[in-house]
Length: 500
Ligand SMILES: Cc1cc2nc3c(=O)[nH]c(=O)nc-3n(C[C@H](O)[C@H](O)[C@H](O)COP(=O)(O)OP(=O)(O)OC[C@H]3O[C@@H](n4cnc5c(N)ncnc54)[C@H](O)[C@@H]3O)c2cc1C
Image (cartoon, rainbow, N blue to C red; front, side, top):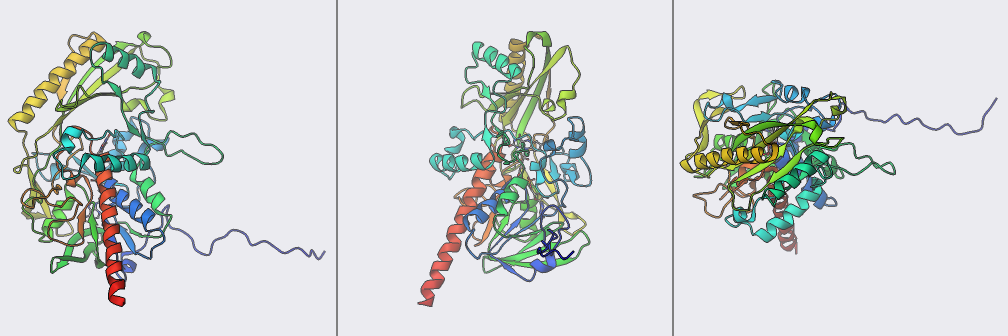
């Protein structure tokens, strides 16, 4: 039979993909000159990339990102159903992508670096409070402007206080805390997408990671290379020119760029800057983290209604308190928890994050005697808690004990101090400020005196305050991206005037 019907072409594409996100080779990238090149794909790098791509959607600017790690997982680990609460820490500490700062120093042993696309946001806990205004008032950016950028960052990361609202365990304990005088106790703000899937719009990536920034950035084209480690920044006449990048096989490439944004983390960013001979009295100094205290007790489950739900309460205890208290049990949020067996007791944890002073002597610096496999000197870390920091630790210990006593009736809860670095909140090694003798970058995140060289990661925070840092890092990174966009536009305008 001769059917006179045209045959449809089947949907086989002309090109195929090797992985779940398009990447390019360093060889290809070395043929281009980038308007902006971002180093590192964690919270800071992802935010810069997203903002640049969104705002420059119709402009022919060339944007690139390089990431030292590989493609490990395409979303936050908690969004993956096979990663239960027990497997979560086991996977986080996988030595093929996670390393500990004990390799640098016994003074600061327990921070971790996650070398993977998405950085540490693949595993973070998503607690996203704003910094207190009493802290911001000492920063070079006004409270009003910070609030505007916090608003943008919260929207981009789906931050809300709805995650724990209505959970019987949380509601019962909030009520007890408020009755006991902790009147500002409230729900922990979380970066979690809680919209329901409707009309084919899928919201299954509940827990936010920087991969969501990259996904949104893909509305426009940018070049991404993974397994690409920045080792040296090139400058000429106080202007950035490009980067030397290496593969794990130790092949070297030079990438040209008019603007470079370093988002390689509080340890790696100053390491690359110092290895490149970038001068700055404050680079590597003012390392700060949160000191930590944890207390644990338990309560009879029969005191709570069913279902129990989860626990997420923040107890600010007034804005001027030098520490933040949180009641939290991340082990109870896994998508596998419906399989949990019934237990007679409910574990109640309380954790405190203490503000650590910004001090010049707490620093990272290059160790001339030890190099990594790329030939870059390793870091050494000098770090200690000041007398004041130790007073804060003492106060938080007492506070944790008192609150657990009040809430659970347990007169002797177990209380312990967390090892240095285990908060994963280290900041300050490229801090922002107006004075080049006490800050590494200016108020826009640009390294003092080097045109086109920016920093956008935790290292730019002027001080650590008491709030978890990532939301603030993202707010600053978006602001830095806006500044770069303005400078690209003004260069365009200057060029077109020259044309007339
Ligand atoms: C288990 C855990 C829980 C946490 N919980 C919270 C929380 O609840 N709230 C909160 O605010 N914060 C939390 N954090 C901290 C949070 O993850 C960090 O604040 C945030 O990820 C820091 O962003 P960043 O851009 O500075 O660095 P990262 O996210 O670490 O990203 C740095 C990226 O740069 C890449 N890189 C490094 N060196 C190079 C190089 N030379 N060349 C190219 N690429 C390079 C790395 O591979 C990495 O991808 C948590 C962290 C962990 C691990």
